[in-house]
Length: 400
Image (cartoon, rainbow, N blue to C red; front, top):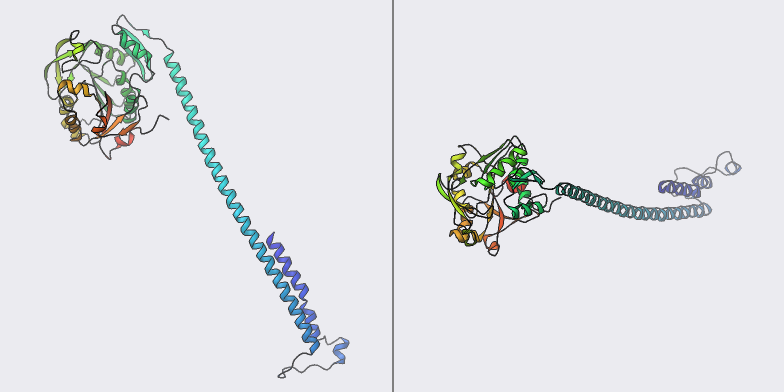
């Protein structure tokens, strides 16, 4: 539209200037009376100039032309200013539209996150409304997110704890970390598997193309573990009826009246009276898995015997460059067995591991130093090597 107005202004100026009238005043047409009555002006004579009237007419025409040009220039400047103003307005609109699109995308993400959260809660409710099922005269079957888990009827407090827990079990944060670390086809070792609360989660993540080795030396929990594996059809889980240690040997195993507290080391004083001992087989993990059998993830829950397990898997630690280890750090356990926490952390550091604390129940991992954990009672830690893919799979934010 601005170009059309500019074109019209130029044409108007040309009409106002009327160059043909200017030429007629100076050189009248030959056929006109004025042209016949006046002799032709000499051509090419030096110093020939138009008369005073013609000169004045020419100056008027030139003045008019200059005025028209000035008007055109002013109009063109006004049009240019208008174009710049319009361009600024368009840029502002584009920015506002871009901001609006960003806000809409963020809103869509929030809606999607809310929808996913609602569905998770629905799944949670759908699972938790299911009652404990009397499986046989020794076991309750409790439905969790990864499948049914067998709980011994002889452990009423433990049964209530599991039944009252969310669908992620007693350690939902650790479960989330394990499921983040384990991918289909991986090899996983569950040391201190107990009844299988985390064994099932590991098996679901590894899938039928993977392999899970579950070690549980205590007969009672191990029988529940076997039922759990069979009921859920986890044929890729292999149960080992022994403990892991620094070397293969026979050792005394201290069985606690509290399920999950049994250990190769003496029990807490409060549990000694009702505890009992039995001799079991202890093996080094290097002796169970042959050379070349890389391991991806190891979960260790052995009530203070973590360094024994670590010492018995030196070859596997060398062969498995991207291995991740999940272990419980319990200062009270270490004090009871006479291990300095500084030495405990140094053993993991010697294998090139970084330390990440696992938050319960969120599963969010944060890097820590040994001195950061001086006052904790118990915490599960993820040990990964810098630059490895396992480190990149650690959950650093809340569940989506």
